[in-house]
Length: 105
Figure (spheres, rainbow, N blue to C red):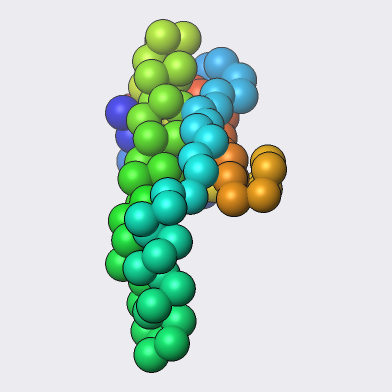
């Protein structure tokens, strides 16, 4: 499945616009991560536990968007975007969305 943040591909023409596709996941913080993160704030620097959790969340949302596009018969997703929002204290939604299309050379 081809994806791009642009609205087209250089080597392909959009044959048909299928429509909006999206994937999301909601994640909560982990007590273990919070303890380690609290200690890291004393000395500063990256908090790799949270970086890992954020990357995994984005990947899961992306994967779910791709699955939806495939179910609709798309070849690609254009206009790909990511978003986040707070749902509850200590939790966040990760959203990936774009426009599913079919392509021709």
